[in-house]
Length: 174
Image (cartoon, rainbow, N blue to C red; front, side, top):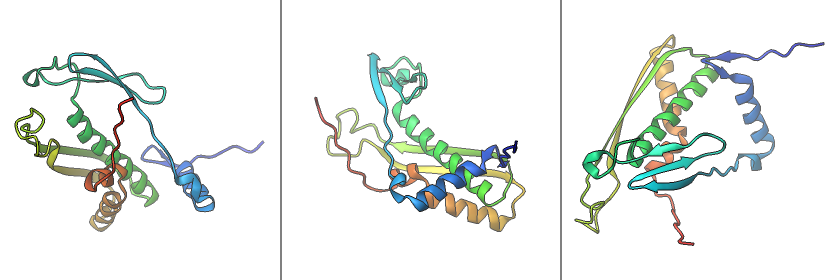
């Protein structure tokens, strides 16, 4: 009987990542994926998102915006989604480059003007005017390797790309 060996670095299964990349090279159609979520309103400004088989992710607004502050609000969740996506990118790409990450911390902030959201400037922008991200990496990699890692992650982040370009959004009432 032959034992299976899985190589990991940064708690990332390198073999699984390489296997997926290889499969996509052989079968490009495998790269086209669709992701789904459903959200149910729970009263007031509270709602719960369900994704795959995970428990509900609670959303609410802070008290100053009329909520009960039982969870992060949607614009905070956008920041978290970007940060989580970047963390995946750093872990995957550092692992592929053979760089050990000792610590990774990503701080995100965004400036949002509430005028449009509150109906006070209907033609304005209800979304973020800008988002700032600070990435702190403690690693055994050289400064040059960490810079290359950073460039790769920023250039390939699905959430980063989604936020930085116009994406058609179709919202149907059914």
